[in-house]
Length: 175
Image (tube, rainbow, N blue to C red):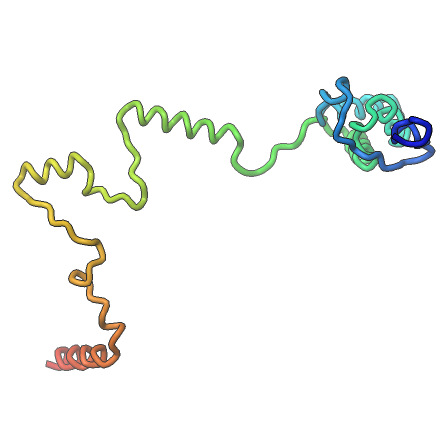
């Protein structure tokens, strides 16, 4: 509350473009207005021939703290004089509806029995593949995927051994 029991909006006199603080508490009739509705009101006033200052004063008198700023009114006044519409222009990128389409597509695949394998899940661990291997007589051998027995990495740890392998490779290529 400002001087004499008036709100901050009532205490200010609108002689020119001013900043109106956007308070959190909004009146019920103004809280339902969206940006498109604000733009439609601005477009109506532009068609009537009002200046941005007059539009701002009218909107503040009705909408109070939920009125758009003077800068925003000037911007949209300029757009509407160039025959711009109230709607936002489409933006580049994936539309919001694309995500929902992907989710629906995945649901359909799950109901048909198609399952996703994660990038790090190996195909040979699938249940059907394991059963086929057992039926043909193969047995599973459990070992870590990067076992030192399978891919020796000791060469990079021991430079002397590395040099000896190079010498052996050189001798093999000469023969």
